[in-house]
Image 1 (cartoon, rainbow, N blue to C red):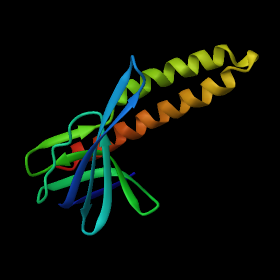
Image 2 (cartoon, helix red, strand yellow):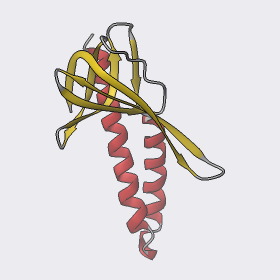
Image 3 (tube, rainbow, N blue to C red):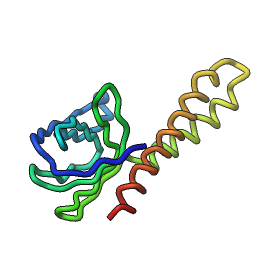
Image 4 (cartoon, rainbow, N blue to C red):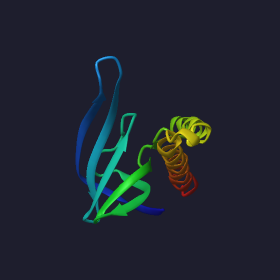
Length: 135
């Protein structure tokens, strides 16, 4: 997990909607630069960042793009993170169902998916701890 701090430049926002007719989810996406490094921040809640704001980010670099998992806007004292509790809850449920059904083969799909969700919820939590502690 890496952190990055700097002044936001060239910010652009978009919204992603996924799901079906009865169930949809919305993600807010901000793409911007800090010190000429491209950043992507995707969260379920609104992202309160503007050009010129100083932010602290935590995330990982993938293919040259810093994928932020949490942020703290140091200019206006606003922060945001991904849905830690949701991923942890689903991860535990999937893992339990997977282990219970591993003998019939279904668990071979559910168990790894559950373990991944638990791992990802821990990544989101670590990212938020980083931006919360470095004030």
